[in-house]
Image (cartoon, rainbow, N blue to C red; front, top):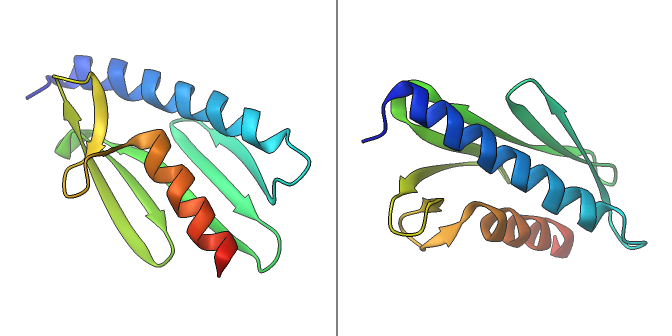
Length: 107
């Protein structure tokens, strides 16, 4: 298990990478969301209908948590892939958020 300092470092890097990934998506003409970061919390906000995904580190659990589509997703650090992964599906953080955005857009 990661110690608190190492968790903080890898969580910050993962959120930075996710922010860049989502900002690139947001720049596309068909993007229906805006992304913003407030400290260690990343928000993905949708206009129609109004909703929001929240991505944040949970230091005591050494996880990144996502609140989206009325569900909580808890991602664990995977040493082998050097990424936060949703264990039950094997999805890394950016792929999971992409899937959730697509699900939300399909209704």
